[in-house]
Length: 351
Picture 1 (cartoon, one colour):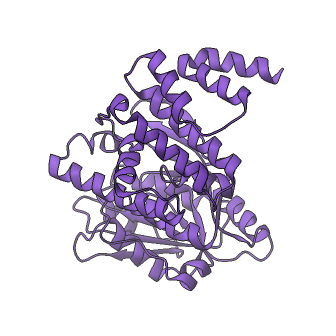
Picture 2 (picture 1 turned 60 degrees about the vertical axis):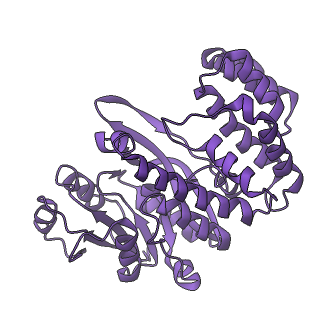
Picture 3 (picture 1 turned 90 degrees about the horizontal axis):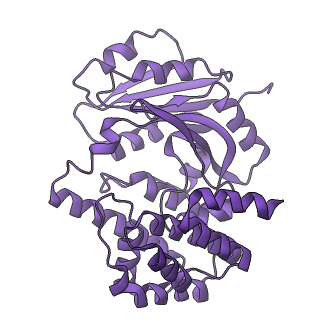
């Protein structure tokens, strides 16, 4: 690429002395060179800032909050102080693959109708074998996935800055968690978001990632659930599925991503069936085929992880899944029964 537009790579950090060097050096080693590396330290109490200040690269800009302000405030400060045409996000413990920025800039330059692009992610850490975390690729798939969860890995995202400025999109300071979920919802209302099929980021899974929920008090956990419900309800209402407040809360309880959740499927099966019918019948904003695929994928994940018996799981799926082909329906039931059997059946159907 001869005329390289300026890209701001934004790293927000707080007490990351163990990982910040590796993250920063992954940016400095990028094949794409026209970078503004904006680092905002959220008043770390360890050596994070000292480590960052060791680097003499002229592309690095370091800002520091006078007190610990939290993630939403710091990310908004990053948006306000960035000058690049594109705004790339990297969490302070994650790692960029060497050609990440180059591939994403090329994609956005060639696809002017796309507001933001993410990628696939390799997870690593905790002395466990790394694996590839696959995200949906197309805009229609990501729009449907937004109903259930964050549609892409925040650390893999590159955003067209002009869209942010035009629509004054910001992180909500009231959301101390899930601020990225709300941010992508805001952005997806005004522009297309896609992902590249390549793995461009390594996402670190640490003790902090795993234990942060289990260590929370019941009050904090209640607030966490309330925030997720609020964001997801906003999304479901935006799509005009016509769910009432009870149905919104039940949908959230069923699909919420918390390890310690308890949900009485038998008691709520009738309402879950009503919800799936409403989503299918009232859908006007999403591609129906894609919505069914994404909805059923998420339903399978919930049922696979639920402790109810195998027969019960199959019965629940038949009651509340969205319409799909007989082949996909059969594959779904096989998936619930056994992942090994599912992969064998998949090869047979392909053959």
